[in-house]
Length: 170
Image (cartoon, rainbow, N blue to C red; front, side):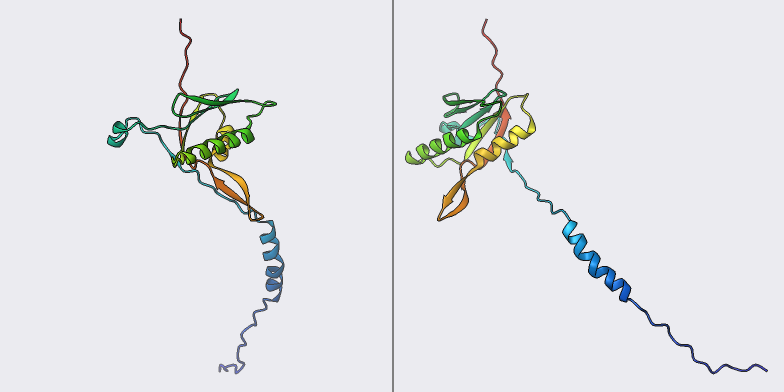
């Protein structure tokens, strides 16, 4: 008749040493090759089309920067030209722009006016990279404080709007 085998089945051993060796080599290599991305967010405020109740009672003086293809023009208050910065060697002069904004900030602080906002008037033919570079320039500048370089604040509250269209009077 049938005989039962008395042999016991042995469970096979799981050998993971080769897998562990692969992971020990692969993980550091993947970490070294990984590109860390940095996402920065620009916070914008749109200029209001109609003034609120507080704006109607007192005149609001805005600092404006007109960004055109051939020059940057700084206005304070609206419509009063402070400085025009033409292009130098085919590029906008951001260093002179930062210096002019530092002077404006200093003069406003001397008069007791705390101003943190600026309105950028963008011409229609300006490319995106120029807009971002101008925004970076008006937001802050590099300053040395106690032997270390820090970002000093200029005008961090940035509003964007279209540049006014000038037509020749006939």
